[in-house]
Image 1 (cartoon, rainbow, N blue to C red):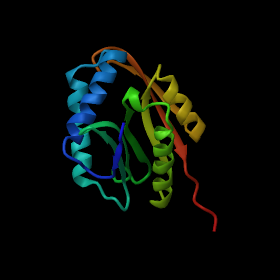
Image 2: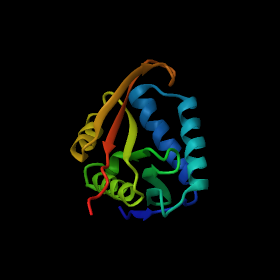
Image 3: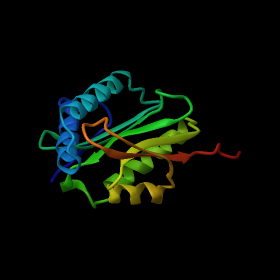
Image 4: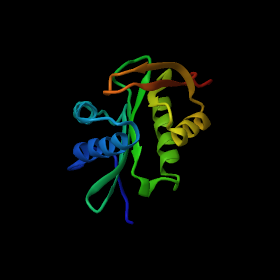
Length: 166
């Protein structure tokens, strides 16, 4: 499969990324239309204000469809970069792309002099949990709520980024 990596919006990216999230999380966690709409809305807002000098966006495109994405939002909160929309289609998993993208996001946060990176993930996503732990993310808090239409446990993970010595 020929994969092209895009670093900015590409036609269909918002819809494809929202659909990939919707299909994935409907199957694993029973999420519905509210979740898909929230992903599309917030991703669209992010892409309209994306600043490549500060933020990071990657999407993997094959045969005209986006099959994976990651974003680092450094403009949402000056105290913490937000890692978002990190997902890969099963066809792209296990090849090192996710690890490489996570490393790129961490490097971008360091270049932007962010004090930390945070993300929200769900209990039960074991492969993702291992990837985040290997990169140095630590649990910050855990919340069980019904915001996605059924009770799920969300975990906030944080990667502190101490200033470079110099």
